Length: 247
Ligand SMILES: [Zn+2]
Image (cartoon, rainbow, N blue to C red; front, top):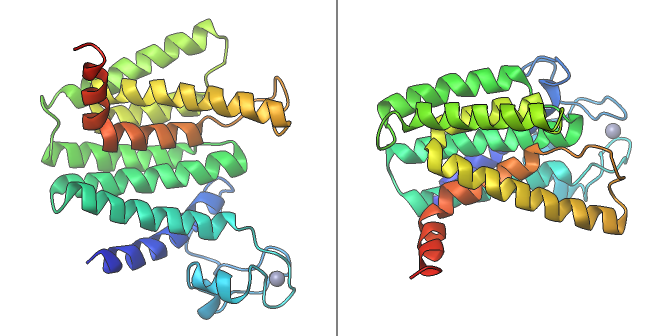
């Protein structure tokens, strides 16, 4: 079973690369077929096989020998690993569908925010509808925690954005509002807490080794994505650990 999920998620991951690269550029996600960005040669069926084609061609375009970024096969592998992980953690339940939807959104955001510093509204709208539908079928306890979570994080980030005069991007606020539907109040706060810690650590390391320049904004979406996965999958462990600190 895990193998089937893994292979399926690899294919999905390769589609998510296409979505993540084309939606921000306002291109269609079905046409034209994927091509090498350097020589423009349309990729054959074999070259479209996720990860494997990258390994076989040793990371180069077959026609012009330009190196292909390992970012894409890495995103495919990450998608596949997360899908299998979600299955082994949750098992067969409607919540698994929600987990897979969540991973799908976060992978797309990870790509668009790193590549374009952008979280597209189109993507957020689409997933907001899907999540609302899914949480109607399989609600949080209590059911209104979805609404409370979305409203709370929206208000909180709006205040932060106003006080910090744009220190918080509009895309990040909208993304968190959508995530509030899935996570509810408690977990969306946990996610925001971790996103800030991760962002601060990465910012310090980045400045120390000179990847990021001071005062130049770095995309926050990737940290939101990682923090949300931690909050969603490890909340039981986190809350148990948190309580053990006081008892
Ligand atoms: Zn090429």
